Length: 463
Ligand code: PLP
Image (cartoon, rainbow, N blue to C red; front, side, top):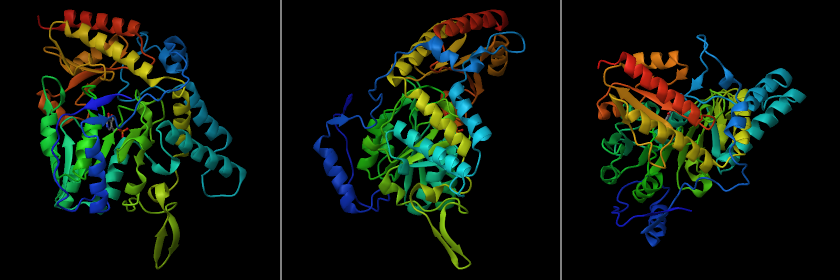
């Protein structure tokens, strides 16, 4: 297990109510346990679970994704470099969902007939597979529509129950809007203070000195694991340590981390993890919030109605406990089944190998395109922990035009502010183009991309 070394950290006493911990004693125990090995911080999110993995064979992986064979209307072969927006789906995911609809479509948890039993077993079987993939138990996984709903769930079900105007929430400038707007709304409603940790615009990393100041006296720290714009992975393990020493709970936005890193949630100290299925081979419309058991007991109902109740009478209602309290109405059955199939498909890979495959393509691409006159790359894909997002801009070809010119060549990239406007403000740009890679992308595709970009710049830039 890798280790982080930390020379000195200042932490304040338990001077006020700490909503993250049930009692002063619980918080003090946490601090004592921590101080014990303080100069030697163990990684709290252990990644890359050892397994009997098969070596990565990209050609055979590509064979599992029918869409990758597609040609665009102009006859060009599709090169899909928009994976940070959503990944493509392997055939087994498409089959699992189609099988549900064609063979045992029924509502779950509601009836005593064969189809209902099969649908319920498949839904709960998927919960087992997904929670096991993330190193936790099924009762700590709340199905949501994606990372956005997962973060909103924390904001409605935990923060509104536990935070008030004396409390502070720490965010970073590189958060996706999904991890900014819910907290701004809460701040408007409850007067909670929101602090933003800046990034260093030279290294594109989080300013950890500023973080150490911002975290003082905070109650909740919400940080993106991997930036969807910069591809930078934040020092999550250190962030969690510093936050917990303040008695703050920690929410990690793992939307961009999940496609290339493994988490063992139960072995980590993170309180909440938000994940979207569709960026890791699963379908759209589903994701989850992973929650530690003690934290789940501090959460109140969010959406109310069917499924989450024990009893309802005209006098009032009683509610179920655990994840059932937060899963209201008909579940996302087909989507859960599809996601379950996706994680079972991913289980065959060593995610270290997947990460390094993606990182190699991204760092090579970033290096080559930064040599093209007029192109600036935002982020540092040469870092070994960077993900597969390469954001760039040309100084005379507008990003929207550049995206269309790349599309003409068959290359699908994302353009815009990437739902990260505060980060765009910090970088001083309105938008970027972003090429983002996943496990089925190849160096041949990257080479073709660099060649086409060279051609486009040569032909269309103001020289
Ligand atoms: N967080 C990050 C870092 C993201 O990249 C995204 C989506 O792009 C989200 C949150 C929101 O995910 P979703 O739209 O699936 O809810």
